[in-house]
Every structure is written in structure tokens, then in C-alpha cells.
Length: 154
Image (cartoon, rainbow, N blue to C red; front, side, top):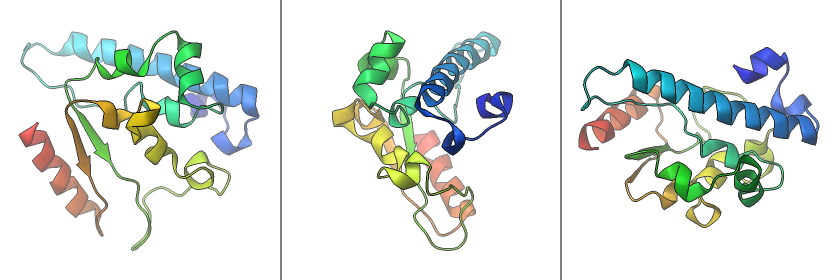
């Protein structure tokens, strides 16, 4: 949504614009979570998100520590917002990627942003006490089935 608003892509932004985009994404995620939580009628209901506030730390130009400092929060505080985390591993080849990235994208250029988002030593999702890792699969159907199984367990 942010890149659509900006009418651009990550790899076309300079460093200050990349920081600005990640700040916007973080605040948009917070707003989406607040809105979604307000619509859950059952207190025992489940809110399943496709990303969390931790994700931007993998895309921040100067690294996770600077990201948390800039946003006035910490990895621990952001991870505490979630009861569990399902960490989907990035597709690494095989029968056709679902999302193509340019070589300039941080996921392709810097050891894959998904890997950096996950690293516990960098304040990533692997530091959450209830993280469920879902590996790569040959087909989307297999991956969806694996995620559904994890959701049931969680």
C-alpha cells in the first residue's frame, strides 16, 4: 500500500526515501492491527496477520538496531505484541516464484530480508517465545496446508 501511494518500488528509492517508506509501513501496520483488533467481537478470536511490525527491521538501511531507535521502540516490545509468530521461509528456487524481486531488492542483495527479519540476534521474529517456522515447499498448496496446520497448533 505504501509503495502504491508513493508510486514507486523499493529499488527505485534512495536511502532517505527507503527510511521514510519503512516508517510509513510500520505506522500503517500499527493502524491495521488496531482496526482489526477493534472488529473482533469474540475476545478469544484470532487475528492472523500477513506481516508484523518487526518486518521492517530487515529492510532498514542501517540495520535493525537503528530501526528500533528511529521508531522509539525495541524488538522485544514489538515481539510482545504478538501471541505467536509464524515465520514463512522465503522461496529459494524451483517451480516458479510467486513474487519476483529485482537484484537491487534487499531480499536478493543482502542475504534475503526474510532471513534478517528472522534472526534472533538482530531482534527478529526467531526471538519470540512461540515462533513456528514454515519451510519452503514445491507448491503453494503444500505451503498453505503447512501454514494451516501450524495455525491449528498455535
